Length: 452
Image (cartoon, rainbow, N blue to C red; front, side):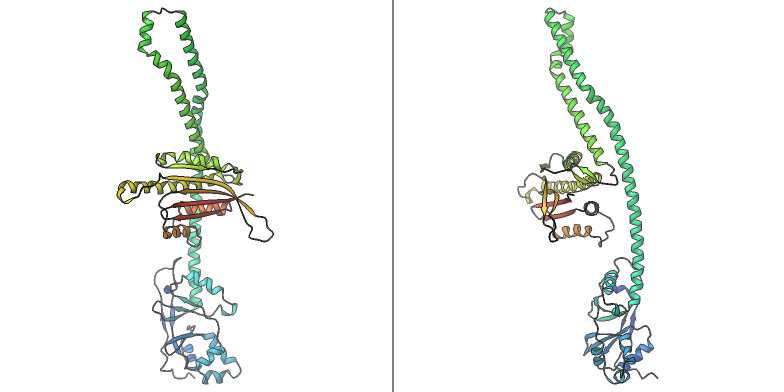
């Protein structure tokens, strides 16, 4: 027989949470929770009456003079019924005594905790506590109970969404990789077609230069052998400005040679940048990679940014050249855009800027050693590539945003070029990408690649 309900205990209230669809960032506020507060002066039998009337009620929030004391679950409370002298304790002693007997660790979380984070914390509990409800503290500093069944159900729904999102992103990444591979093949084909005529020009320039010199020598020999030339020849020499032609011909040929050489280097750099990596990494000259990228972005520098190369002695580094070129390109363009934006601001507001040094990007390479983290293990050797600019630097919030984009847990909707670079360095090459920036001094990206 059920006893009469205690007038000092208010009936439980179920809040149904949010009616919107759950997502990766959903919090505990959006889940149904029970509001059932009981003073510890009540007996276990009084609370058991409510548990029998509300079979889905997971437990009770224990209060003492309106202050939160703890929580006792339905399972813990009803366990007293099967203990020796349990019925006597259950009916006569108050909840304070029973709670001291059944005291267990309570998981208390704020309602702003994400559902996935809450699920991870519940799984860290002892196996005997996995079914215990969670105490949720609201913004208004009240306490509610969350049933593990509701949390599990919500977590499975979100994990299904997360799996779908990962699948869609992997498919999009595969499509993007295929597009980039096709674009690389197309650019490589165009570059090859450009190199062919450039090769013709380059190969024939030597012969043209020699032929022109021979012809000039022949004309000089004629002038010596025939000191008295006809009026027609003298008139023709004046029309074609022979004296100027004789002096300028070698300069024209030198200019053509220089232009062909620059075009050849540019097309070769383009081919290297669009290099399609093979399955396994290959030894690469990192200095040649950096020089190729600098040549490609030379038009963006606009003569306003100085590139300082402080190259050390580097051995060939085993890596995926195409992906590493993309990293160098991303970081150098980031530095270039930062410096150009700063220069534009200084031109618009010259009165608000102090005398600044010429914008520059300094590239430093060297081999470094780091102490082993394990005892008796040899020190590790790394190749360090530092790309630093003397811009205005980044704020702490901007740096934090970039570092968060490196994190897998952040799962940004759109990957940035720096996040892609971080993944290439760490996941594909086992290296490190460090960021150091100070306001008023500049920004430095350090790439560390292991030497095998």
